[in-house]
Amino acid sequence: MQPHRKTLLLACAVALAVGCMCASAGLQRVAAAQDASSLPRIGGQNVVVLKRKAPAHPTRPEFVSATIFPGRGMNLFQITAILPGKGEVHVLASPSVEDAAQVLTGGPDDIHGVKSFSFGGAFLVPYPNRIRGKLSPDGKTITTQWDGKTLTLPADWKGKEPGAEPHAIHGLILDRKTDSLKSENTPDGQTVTGIIHAGNFGGYWFSKTDLTIRVALTAASVEATITAKNVGHEAEPLGIGWHPYFNIPSGDRSQARLQIPATKLAQVNNYDDVFVTGKLLEVKGTKYNFDVPGGKPLGNMYLDDNFSHFTRSNGAVVVNLTDPAYHYGVHIQGLSDHIKTIQVYAPPDKPFAAIEEQFNFADPFSPVWKGMDTGMVTLQPQQSVTWRVRLELFTPGQ
Image 1 (spheres, rainbow, N blue to C red):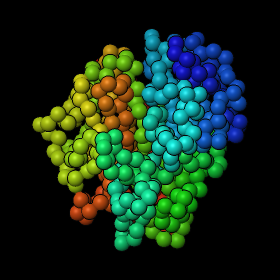
Image 2 (image 1 turned 120 degrees about the vertical axis):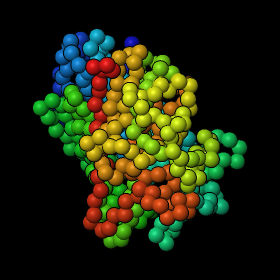
Image 3 (image 1 turned 90 degrees about the vertical axis):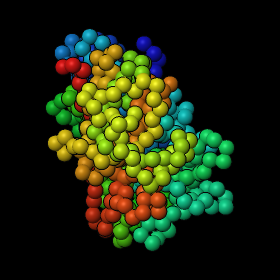
Image 4 (image 1 turned 30 degrees about the horizontal axis):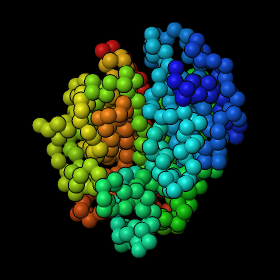
């Protein structure tokens, strides 16, 4: 067993700030519970680990734990499950909590918390994905327009190639502390709810916003819900997304299968900038068509693409990631009507696929879209909008 896996399996107490009661360990492979106070603080706040009791000999896949970083915008850092005949598995591709603490420091490489979306599952508010704009002389901000008004955002990302254009990425709560936490035990698990009084997101956004972020763990599902409410006095645009790195437990990425019920793909200039051109391409008849029964093998294909125009199942956008070699699969269900696109990032040399259900297209304020509805929700004062995603496990072929 790898050291980082042992750390997360041992961490079965909820942080003292939450005051949750920890469910007793029900797995033969899990050692005694570790005191939560021994875990490093992330972003200046205690780590929260939701835990539930599971049978020693499960007959179906079950979720076991969920690890959350309240000091990092309620980042859903890790999820563990138990599989029949296989034991514990990491649902998300993440390092140990200790290793994450060495990276999430707020230092020069972590400006505005950008390291938060390099692993685990960062929540992205008030915009997921990239936003381009006019770069300031000092190179620290970009400006763009919404509804005739100017937005100034941190220029906190750029491609790796020489001359790559700095731009804003993945919202403004990546390094945000949570203002209050509440937890509860449920009949088959635990939940935690964090409140973030985001205000104007550090001066970068219009109006004022309150965020309620809830993570619920049961045997059958892990569900994340984010509600954003405009508590200010003027209208604001609002986008919500998630950046979860779904683990491929076998490590054999080439045989893993992806099923996305999408008919269109946003064209980008290249895979370094990943800037949209404003053109939507049909996926039918191309290598990007993942809307096939049982999914399509990833092979050696590189993906950093934004899919849209979905066929919904009972109102949900359902993406399936299957690892046949490990007899493992996960349903990623986007339950919100406002989820319009899914960004998929899957490099061929890594055993994961980041599957990001989000409200909006990339660069939603850009003129390249020529007035198209890009998925950003306009919230009037006192209006709210909710993003909700549910994960369920399955065994391929059953």
